[in-house]
Amino acid sequence: MAVVMAASTAAACGQGGEPASGKDGSLTYAIGDEPETFNPGLQDEHTDPVTELVFRGLTRHDKDNRVVPALARSWQAAPDGKTYTFALRPGATWQDGKPFTARDVKFTVETVRDAGADSPLSRNFTAVKAIETPDPATVRLKLDKPFAPMLDALSMGMLPEHLLRGKKLTDPGFGQHPVGTGPFALKTYKHGQYAELTAFDGYYEGRPGLKKIVVKYVPDDSARLIQLRGGEVDAANLAPQQAGKATGHRLEVYPTADYRAILFNMGHPAFADRRVRRAMNHAVDRDAITRSVVLGYGSPAKGPLDTSPYAAAPGFAFDPGKVSALMKEAGYVKNGRGLWARNGRTVAFELTTFAEDSLRVAILNVSATQLKQQGFDVDPRPRPRDWVRKHWGDLQGFVVGWGTPYDPDSSVYGPFASSQALGKGGSNYGSYSNPAADKALDEGRSTLDPAKRKAAYSAFQQALQDDPPFLWISYLKTINAVPKNLTGPAQRTLGHHGYGFFWNAETWRYN
Image 1 (tube, rainbow, N blue to C red):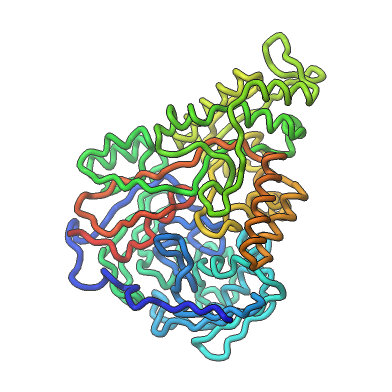
Image 2: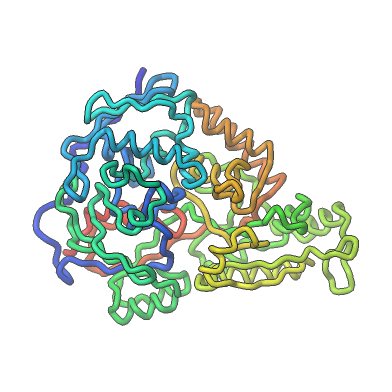
């Protein structure tokens, strides 16, 4: 039987009506991370607030992160998973007034698919071999093999053919001045400063409750809190140690799929032996870090899918005895400085992260201290964000963040499949390569059988347990301080950087 999904008639609940009050219906929000582009086809699952507000995909995610209709009002999936037929929502328009049609869908999927290394998300559309547009309101995708996350992948924002035809997907003009079909349009963007968005009156679900949202880029945590308390911004993303200092505001504390871990650069000789990486995973006390650094706003991490229904990672307990046993098995002995050494070489590496991110720096320092106590020669050295972005391939160890709350493929294929290695233009920044993990990842995305998918992701997590690419540390909760009279924010599990907070921002308003 074909699967059919239809849009709810209640989709626009809470929208329209009288204009918002309070600062003339505007909200200024401070966040630390500024994306390199607002083009959704160039982002890797981590859709930033501006892109999330400007664009819509054929599908989107509800409060439970289930796939629901967006620009597609309904769809049918063939039983063999090789054909998807979408009925587009009538009346949807681009923010420049042009109609949204099936040609835009065809253009988007083909452009991202064919972008190769220019787009990390091209991996989601390689199975699409033909796209039919029998009429302006119908799109049919034909695949050469099943791709289980297809509906999830189509939550990526659609792109306007009339603005990008004849241009490369990486066109910087569109990346800084995007036009979408979402509830807010980008009016002004100042790199390193802010992005100002205004309500799009033609939004297909109705007029948003707020007139304007300004996303202000403030990398330093302390500066965000100062601006919040001083009234320069209305809302802000906060670090755990700041939660009790946001006086006069309401805290929205949400769970996330966002974890912190130490990424191992597999090209560095210190990490060549998997026993060393397993030993390092046993050398860190995650419970202590969660208490002392994350301050309870999170939980110890076992692997990359802890918040997913597919979670099956055994995890690594803090165990100095296992550290010693594994290091001796690998041929290491303690030298006169109490460091593990083999043939006169210690397990020496630089551990870095973004210097502007106080939480990552704190995790770095405590982790480095614990690793040193267990005999690893760690040099903790935070670096400026711009420096890191220019030297991804040179990093030895890095306090990384990742994780999406959607289909498991979106969380694990990019960072762990060998085909997605950094040198190939992918998001596997440590260039991890494990045939067992690759096999499980491919099985997980190519089968439609729920039991087989669960088995595949269990096998994948076991492969990472045996041959760890990361030293897992902690999952985080995200903390946002907002005005007390702002209504609408609704809790759900968010992604990396706490992205997704604006998932229903079209319903927000001041009371």
